[in-house]
Length: 236
Ligand code: PEP
Image 1: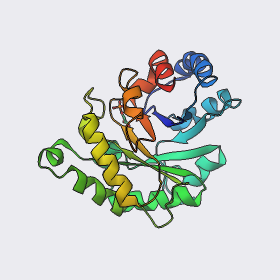
Image 2: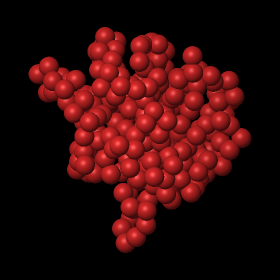
Image 3: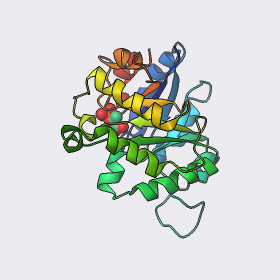
């Protein structure tokens, strides 16, 4: 079954890395049944786009500003990303919430900007370990969902990525039943078919079993998306 697999390179990569990464990626893309979205850092979006132009893989970014243009030194607008061929933007990632102080309100405005630019928002939500241990994981995540999604959101312009903070980059993943429970809660809260991705320590060792869980429409892959051989196995 076709799923969506998003690669979040975070602040990693270099011209040499891209040169080595692209050939095995091209060969994996020629056989995969899945939809692939690669999200490199800003400077590498164009070279990766050019390298993948004869493939069905899509390009995404990892952040954007809320405004279309103006005096915002150092920022990049959603429209600029759309203009250079991006089809999606990751937004609400826990690293941006924690390290850059992004609030639900800001994320909501960014998602509106992404939609206005004609792209898909990959909206990350997820609880920390304290919330999970106190039995408030679902409540926390549904609250984030409600606070961040603007009225423009629909199943065609949005993905929701459930990323438990304690699973990101730790090698620890939730139990299958925990993923099932959260994705069901998201599905019920959304009341529509917005695709639901799981993210957090996805590797070639666990992706196949995660991808078959109910209401899992794909995965968001961080660290493992930077290892050509591992990513090749994930996208199958
Ligand atoms: C992420 O940062 O979105 C992520 C899922 O990271 P990792 O796969 O490395 O846990």
